Image (tube, rainbow, N blue to C red):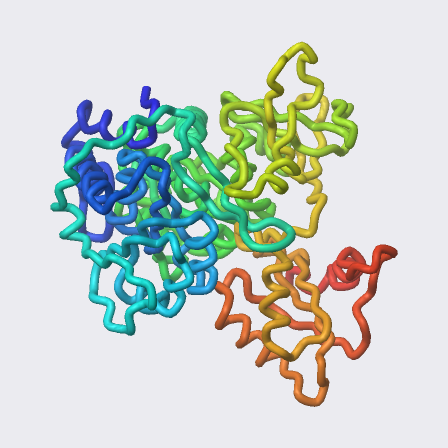
Length: 529
């Protein structure tokens, strides 16, 4: 069993070197070739001067080079930071600054977008381009620019630093209810425990073909790689344009496992599934929000031989629960029980255990619990706290993730999601900070007051709605405000609707905008049909 993340690939290269490991478009690479590419990438990063635990960011769509950098960074003793390719330059630059990225791997056109902002990333030392030259103006501060072929042929002249399983391996950025995104620090042990656990209950096999359609910056998307490599299976990379392209790929590539978030399942459910897909697709998984009952029923009708796994997770603990397919008929609204090698507790405010049926906070303990938030001890202390009711004689308390999610547990130990304790918005499988959206709204210069809200939506889980009081009603344009947001935010963070008011937004006794009152007022805005 692998102890470090990159060993997943290296061990499979020894066992089954000629087995196909990864497919991207017309290119297939076996485990021996992928291991060689990962080793070459690690040597190239070392040649750039990468030191132990320094950060390497990847700002690319799904492609072979992205996979090589993730695992090559781990082999080199660094920490990889996958950046969602949908993010805009300002958000990318924030991540580069926040976790002191030393090396950025991206494409030429993306580097051009970032050029004006790179001068404000003082720790960035090297820029590696997988294709195309940078023709725009150079940043004020010199950055070493190299190209992918040069990286793969560079001579490091030194070996990677020694790593152990508790060392940092990755930083994944996730939004909280306030402020900028937070970097969740994951160890090799975190990532491997999650990979082995999920591969166990999904029963991954060497003959499986797993379609990766979700971004690697999403822990759920990264899992498609790690769980495939645990079993020596094949991962097929895909960035789709239309939902029907996913179904076409499932049929053409003989896909046996497909993971998606509720908005994509909503789009896939009514489409026709070819016989090849119906016969070959062994399982589907859902996370990032509840799958609508009608969507689940439609998928089960179209895919009668496919086992659906409904899952719940959070980046701070990767994956927490899953509902076995055999329980779907009895508990279709449940998020299931704890995954292998994890314990999930439901506790009251004082940390005592809730009775069956009593609402409480979901607390996750075990080796999947992350190392905390990068460079943010205050927020880490809020979310990562001692396990409730642990042995008082334990001299060093074990830390658990206090999720902020309210759940209940039935008499049989199955969990049901009830809601969140904070104002975090869950939309399209993403966690979105309302504060981050509101900063962009205020930045338009049109707004006196603003509140970004998550309103229940049958397809998205929650839709982002901006309730605003304009500075000057005569000059205000809701369409213009949305256009401004599209310039500064990725599509999943852009408000679906703007509600304008000529009066002050309601306030609670503490003087803050009363988000709960506004949500209740707009709750039926996106009723199905």
